[in-house]
Image (tube, rainbow, N blue to C red):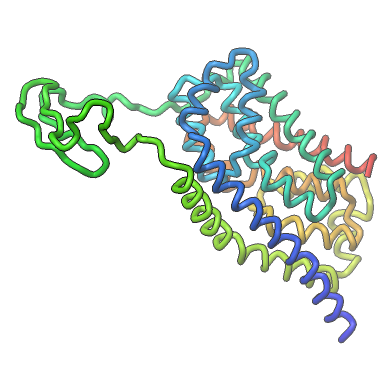
Length: 335
C-alpha cells in the first residue's frame, strides 16, 4: 500500500509541476496578446480574405484560447462584420482545438512530436472543413443578429459627448448638433477613450489578466494531477481493456464518440489520459477522445446553437468527429 501511495505522490508531483509551469507561461502570453493585439481591428482585416478565408479563420484560432462561451460571441461579431462563413467555421473548429494552450499542454505531457502531429491534424482539418463549408449551402445556416432595433436611435435627441469619463452637456437639442467639450479645446491635444495606451500600462494589464487566468485554471490543474496520480495507481487494467481496448483499433471511434457527450477541460483531461495510456489505452484512442471531447462537447454544441442552425451544427459535429477518428488512426499507426 505504501508503495502505491509513493507512486501516486511521484505522479502528482511530476504532472503537477509540469502543468503549473506551462499554465503560468501561457497565462502571461495570453495576457500579452490581449493587451497588444487589438482583436476587433484584427477581425476587421481578416474579413477581407477571399479564397484564403478558411486558412485565416484557422490561424485566428491559434492565438485565441477561447472557451466555448467566449468564441461564440467573437464568431457572431465576425459574421456581423461581414466575415466569410468559411472563416467563421474554421475559427469555431480551430479555437478550441488548435490554440496554443491545448498544444502547450500536449507538449508538456506527451512531448514535441505528439504536439506537432496533433496540431497539424486539427489545423489542417479546420482549414479543410471550413473551406468546404464556405462553398456549400451551409453558409446560409447562420442565425444573424437583429441590430436594427439597437442601432436605430433617435437622431434628434440631444446626446452628451463622453470623453474618457467626462460628460459635456450639449448646448442644443437640434438634430445631431452638440456642443464640444470645453475641457478639450486645444487642437491636436484632445484626449479620447480610444487613445492608445503606453507600453507600461499594457504590460500591467497583460500581467493582471495573466494572473487572473492562472488563478482560475490553477485549481483544475491540481485536480487533474490528483486524478492522474490516482488513476496511475488504482485504476485496474481490466477496466481500460474492457471499455477502451488494449491497443485495439476499434477503440478509436468509440473514444471519439464517447468524447462528444463529455465536457473535457484540457488541463484535466490530458494528465488523466496520460495515466490511462500507461494502463493500456492506445495513443490513438487518447487523441480521439481529446479531439472529440474538446472540439464538440455537449455544452459547446448548445452554445453554438445560438448562432448556427441545425444543419450547420450537424456539419460541425461531423467535422470534429472526422478529425478525431482520422487523427486517432494516425496516432495509432505511427506512435
